[in-house]
Length: 70
Image (cartoon, rainbow, N blue to C red; front, side, top):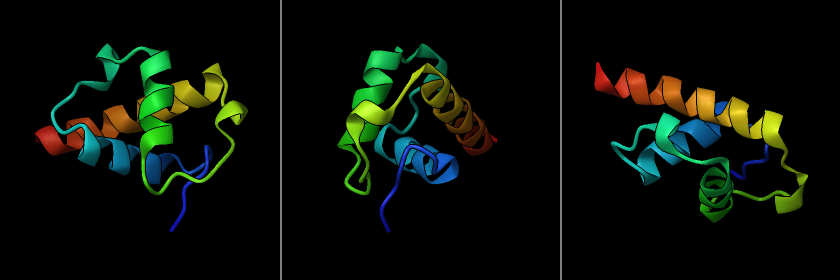
């Protein structure tokens, strides 16, 4: 399965797996962009991101992070 910028839940799970224990709120958007594009399952235009998409991904990742803390 390949991910695009719109696959928030899948990206959040992938990021949580790849960066276990990292609080998403401590990640700068430039690093978040790199983390997303480095996921093996990511298959979209790296230039198609924007601040709103990155913020939505960060919030989805935060939810996954918090779920894993419980």
